[in-house]
Image (cartoon, rainbow, N blue to C red):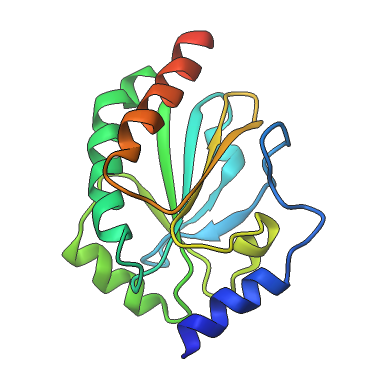
Length: 163
């Protein structure tokens, strides 16, 4: 019930700062999933960033997070980064999920949904591909394994264009 209310709440709280293709990605600072450091989107300036909003109760996230981790390994040496933002109200839920489905990229926690609201996230997972200049180049809602072909092609295009 709370999960459904969270999604409905996110849908109702759409702001003028929603991120669409062509917009400058809204900046943010969030704690990492373990609460040991703060991370800012500006820390990744000059890189192509795949910003992925997810939650422990999101079934497609069980597929997407490990596949994004493999993509990160393949492309990180070319200036690509994945930032995952967990929107679970209880950060312990996200921590347990990451222990079960470990990834090799930075995972942040947004339990109050402030950053998710700024990006107008309505569905889990929702992702924003951000170029080296901080511009959102595409928005991807939901996830199916076959989506990775298109996602990878978009990322590689940005990496080639901006290499």
